[in-house]
Length: 418
Image (tube, one colour):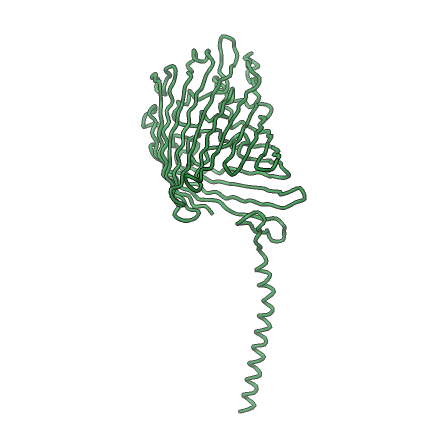
């Protein structure tokens, strides 16, 4: 019996030793697993080292659902949907590597949108899905290459919510090649060449031929404790080669635009409160002003870059300007409100009036109430009203003359970011 007990005890000890040996063998594996994904603190929260590299990656995005109600006083009810839905998912990847020239960065924001009448502001056309690259660029040693927010833009409707929101200011994503010089103290200057085809409004004959060379953009930007400002300029080619066979020429060879914007931080009103004021002017460059960004203007009267003069068989420039403002105020850390609006004017050549176009002014006003009950979750209720007043009566889509047109929109939205 004693011999049997001794054998059992020795067997148990051996078994425990084997288990201990196996557990010890597992320890390096677990330690390696713990080190497999390491936090990268160089670029802020959310970055991790890609295993086996010195590149830091941040994965993020959002899911958002919008519900819209809208009304157009210049359209019959049968020609637009009074309400419709949109859903969108975004995947963002931000990869950064430290080099002897500074940070090498690549950024992707890929978005998929599902809803009714995509690509149609009237929300009519059946459910469909659209995939688009919202942003996709490389930054290195002060250079930026790829699809980015245009370096002409400043405020860019920062707190105007929704996929189908109005555009109050210059706000466009473009493909660009740019260089930014950092002078320190929050002051930078950028020069950029940009494909501004998305900003082209063509001419009154209906042609939207693109220029042979990209637009040239430059800005000076400052960010400080009190706020910031930006001054921007743009020069673009006016291409009339499409009309060479019929002898139509363009009076001006270039279009241009300028922008000035200022931002004030208002901590005395509330933590996070801000006020933006921005103005832009464009000649043969309406897309740089935001004047076509609302839905109150009859589409046939939307600002064109060029207008046809039959007396001279030439195209002449149209001029537009806008001024916009936006105030964000935090009632509590979880609840904030936004008030925004703009005013703009379009001036068409005198000859264009004889062909059915009109000078006009447009104004927009709106606001939203926003609630963020927990981090990265926000609920939004937003209302926008806009009106366009024409200097000369114009035809609506049904052949009647009117001197004004308006639009209103209600938006209910929820977004979860990660």
